[in-house]
Image (spheres, protein in one colour):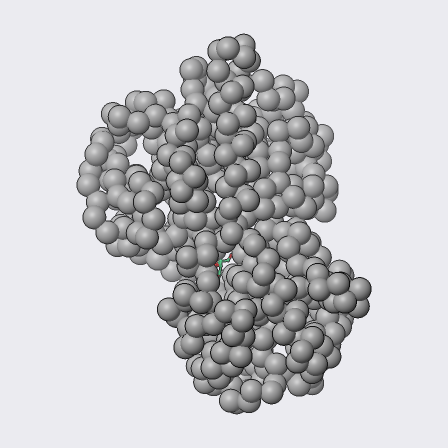
Length: 505
Ligand code: ADP
Ligand code: GLC
């Protein structure tokens, strides 16, 4: 089985969030199971820097571009996964974030940059890139790759396509003029194709045209078919429900494993949970918090955006700061949240510490050194940080939503007694519900035996890629079978006719 991953991030080349973790980790897990998974990414400056040895292997014939487009081949550091970088310096050779400029605004030419990625993917997929390799499956991820299934759907024969929804709230919306400027087939301008309320929506290319859709947790796969979480695309997703499956993300336990984690002051395992204390002391020191082993230390790492419930934390702070706890936050994102958190840290010095920025090693140390990990997301397609927290015995407090609901088992008296509980789960997206969950956690924290039992129960859960990679392989195999002439069916038969989108449907 040959699978081409098309993505805008893949760790360790480039990462802004969980998408990067998944598009680095899943191909490696597939490869370990005998699947020839390869990755296609833009040659961002940072990706080229982290890529190690690269060699040009193909020159792509793409019309109307001012400079040639080449594919640079390399192997993902730490894995045996081959990747190709789409090298077109005018689009990708820039410093910093793949999506945003230094002022935090989207790059002005994002539509063209990701349309180019999709066109390059289509050439590789159709065997028109001059490579001696053609995929059976093209597996695309999020809006940045949405045009690839749409372009491939115009071709026959073609490989089967899978589109994974990591986050439906990012849709790649652009004005109609962009559609024209991109020179896309005119028939794609229809609300049964790429049009979404008068705009071009890249994500619809994936949602409408991919042969199969996946979402990154079973609960999210259901939620996105409702108005509350569908971002206007719920009608389309209901229409395609038969082809949509929730597959929970896994974690790469070569990278996220407290027994092997070189970022930690001291490595530890479930059997030697006591060694976590050294990591806590080191983290308190690093964040400038008082070195107090008895006070529960709550960590939080993530993009500082509305999705993550940062406002809930800010609103809950006056109450939280009256409780016996320390809070250490690492994140970067919306300027308003960054400013508010900085101000709060100045106000609650010694109890709240904030690091604004992106720091992979520090993220590991927060997981290793915290007692508790806070993830009060308003929505969460899967969430990896709570999975890392479980693995690190850092008890998660989460909202009952998306992948958080699928992975954390609330410490009710019954679940605690049965040894099933792994964290604290609250329902309402309100500061009061958050504070109540923290209160429950602090009460249990005082009972060290019960606390350690809870932490160990989380550490024993297996969220490695083992199960999820097997599910993807099954999905791919089903698609390849359906496409084989013997079955007389084509993957094109995927419920694409008469699509009604969003709240128009
Ligand atoms: P999302 O993909 O929505 O951002 P996830 O929980 O799936 O959320 O994944 C977030 C990933 O990004 C984790 O690996 C997390 O450690 C990492 N991350 C997020 N923000 C930061 C940061 N400021 N510094 C370091 N790592 C971060
Ligand atoms: C998205 C989601 C997150 C998920 C990640 C990887 O960024 O916000 O919940 O874990 O993708 O699938």
